[in-house]
Image (cartoon, rainbow, N blue to C red):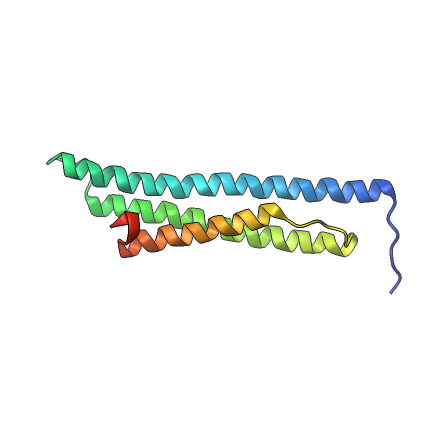
Length: 130
């Protein structure tokens, strides 16, 4: 197969495209992390409210399930965004094999792991969730 030579403008265009993909993934990280922490916060606030008040606004089970749902949506959405980003960068590497290490994907993977630990903690009531 014939190897394609890229000019300077093509190389810079690939770079801009890769950086745009990283910015998109960072946007997903921010959004999904906010969903996960908001779910955890709802769970903890309702738990503390139950301790200080005899009259709760919602059942503790409802707050726990809402927290689980938000943490789950955030985690799985970020997992899908990571997979989509990885496929896109892999496609870019076919055009230009000189693509640097993807720090945004590494951070997103760590946040996905954090999300799974939040989900596990809320579901099993262990750690700070008990």
